[in-house]
Amino acid sequence: MLLPARTAVLNYLYGVKNADIAQIMEALKPIYGGERPFNKTCYLDHVMSLEANGLVSLCKYDLDENGELRMYFEISEDGKATVDKYVDKRYRA
Image (cartoon, rainbow, N blue to C red):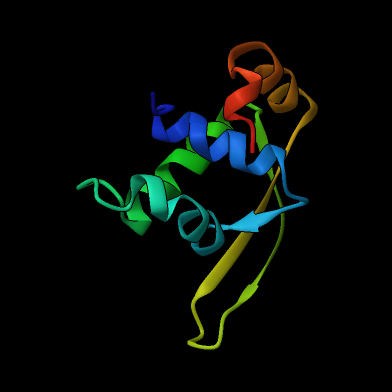
């Protein structure tokens, strides 16, 4: 069974201090990389939706080597509680 992609993003952030979109996508690529919506726009949408719901927060930002904005997100206490409640331990990151 696969977790929904947005839940997988939250689950991944549960196991790391913080991550940007590229790091999240790299970690989830083995499982979700073959899906059509596996692109930066969709994954940015996932993270922004999680942020709007208070499950993750923007913790820092900078410019990458190409001059593009890179935003780092970390899971909130509400996000951790959501993973604890809804994600079975065998799927935890």
